[in-house]
Image (cartoon, rainbow, N blue to C red; front, side):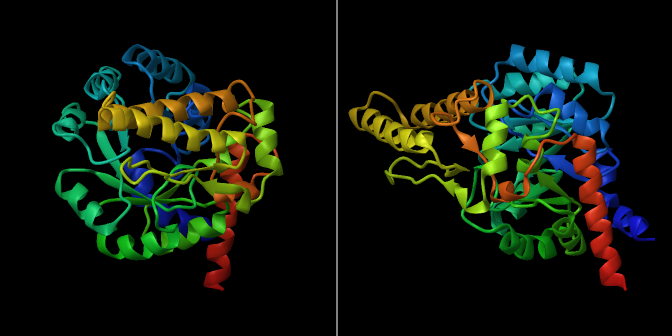
Length: 337
């Protein structure tokens, strides 16, 4: 009966995504690639390729490789400030990608129409209620409400506050997925009961058996507690840098120095604001690669959400999803008793 209750609460999300469990995997650069994405979709969740700084040719190859590993639906996450955004959208269209996630700011003019022209569903991040309403008016099909507890790029408001603010207003209009700091099924059950169509988790999947992340990267997660995942500091108000949550290491300090370097280039007129922000994005992509692929856990970026303390061992994706669903179903059963 409880499993039926969970399925009922997730029905809107599973119908929208075309999968068995309304659990999306957050797009993590270098981590959310063909192996992890296909494993999550094959296990009944919804995998999402992190395009990040990929060229159209690289994304084309990654989508094709993922399709070779799963016949289940999966999505592609695109960054709004990517200079070849429309070429990337065209790659997704050629592959009949069913869902596109846009991250990193408001969708540029024409991008929503380009994504939906081929029948793809569009998911966007809404860090505030006003923005959620604006996105839905502009044609976005679903929202992700992600709080500051998440890993990687974050906003300033906690998940629980955003959920209380946005779900009562928007959940009847479009499917809304809650993200940020979710590590157990009890939290999933709570957000579903509040009106969420499903949830998104990243940190919980980063150290899955199928994740290609370096063993040293995974070991850093196993050792970390919630308080070790800290947000980066913006050192120059003229350079609007979205904070990034990661485990504190020497790479955290290096980012502070990089901000100073880019701010100086901005001062001298050597770069404009758009180029300055791109340099910051490329820095993060490189620093993350150093940690995830090369295993440089001191100099690289260990992007992690505050749920990292709940990541204690390497386990298969199917086991993680099954555990989350069992915990959620158990929570619903206890509340019904």
